[in-house]
Image (cartoon, rainbow, N blue to C red):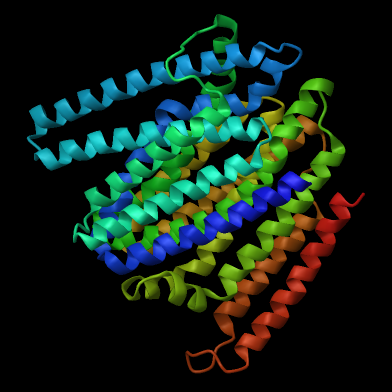
Length: 472
């Protein structure tokens, strides 16, 4: 319980730092430059997931099993992890060099585009090392170093952006280089805490096999999810404009940063303990599962309702003037969509991960990707940002249904209970209130009071339902 509150505290801190970052970037950068920065950062994220995500998720899942009953097990496991990371790094660097060469020879792209590819791969490398360090700190139940790592990186990134602004270098490449530098120095400082070796590389066959068997399907799943996340912004940039993509991505990324961080708090706090318990008993610990579900809803739902009910206030604080209109329009429906997405990723899929049903998760995600790409192709040319949201919403709903069916077949119990339906009704009610209670197109002076009254009632309902779950 204590570690949970430490995670929550650091997540709140890093959440505020993230909001401050968005506030700065949307004020100092134009829509087009901000869109270029997000596309470069997204390309780096794709590289990180494509080459390294399987190793990161496997590390968190297999760590307790590797070190149990063997004092030297941790050393051998860390050497194996390091060897696999080095191998993936070599593959990634060679692949990016080949892509850059291919672009230069066949397409005669300018040197700037080739430099973009290399920057994206460098970002993927440092970002993946950062995530690996995070996973090891989490597996070792070290919430304070975990939180300090995240906070230090964000503070350093903000400082580097300040330097770039001071010297008048406010372009996408400069911001990406600042991002790479923040990851690099955070890794350099915090890696010794994990006892992860730098050059000591070992590849133990059995451990490699276990990591690959568990992580490879999940890695493909994360790649699929990332394509679902990124397809809309890249298609908006190519079909509509980079500026429109930047506006859309700014609001969506704010929602992901807010709700994703909130959902990840509970996942990080509980999944490692649930995995350790599962390895010992081969069954899900009911007490931990009840606490996990209760806190999951208790934290995620209020955050979702705040984004739905108060987009004007949030947008005025967070976004620059050129981004606010889009943010106010889309924040409520983005929040509702992201609630469903993170309920699937951080709760429903967590049980499938415990039972090592990673192929099932992959099948569901591939189905969602097919729906997402098909709908984006049809809707974005006509409806722009609204079409991109509709494609995301439909694919997320399909994913939730698929995960519910898979979890029910696996465990024999339906994971969708009263608390979920109560939550959905609350969110629908908040959206209706947000959409229809208006006076002459403007919110009346009683609206803030009405919002607070309804929000308080919804929070009370969710809190009571959640408390029933984790107080038993």
